[in-house]
Length: 69
Image (cartoon, rainbow, N blue to C red; front, side):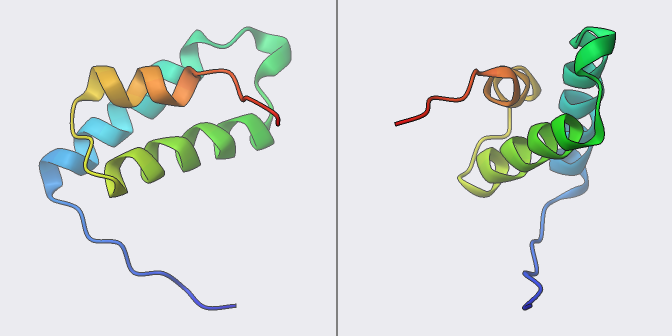
């Protein structure tokens, strides 16, 4: 398994951390399982990798419901 090397500024890292913390704290207790935290973090990373830097937008994108085809 290859490891991807992602580089973000310290400001972007703080924005991602804030978005993850707020997203996680907004979930009801029954939804707070590790797989959901991983999903939130993955969505935030993907959005940041695509160029999003706003903590508010990162939060919104993390909490968007999944759309299954």
